[in-house]
Image (cartoon, rainbow, N blue to C red; front, side, top):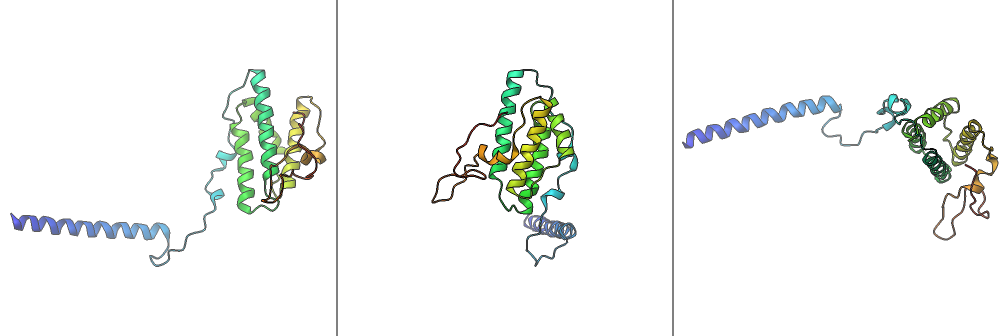
Length: 191
């Protein structure tokens, strides 16, 4: 009985060693790194995202309830303009990619299908500008005006966008300031 247990033990050890070598060989082929080099690989997430995810079809159906449609619209514009107001003055490449990706996903996921399709058309015609906080804020104001124009609403003077959307930014020493003029309090923009 002891001999049979010993043979089983050595057989199991042998199989584990073979299995380990197979895993090690596969790992080496996949990563193209030596086992001694544990430096992290640079990973560009934008290359992993299939363009159909960012630029694909609108996901939502038509939103028939006009009250909810208007409320969602006001909230969405508030969110979008606040994001632009909080965007860094000098964003990294990663931050710019993140904002641009968000805008495209926002257009796909917006809960009003017809509104989402219209917004996708607008951002195709006027691609997101994400180089700086100011360019992002002005771009968002411009596309908001494109929507307002189609809805026959009053257009907004985009040179005053910073006066209307407070980024809530504050350093540790001072009060919050808005995008372009720290002395003007936040007011409501016509949606």
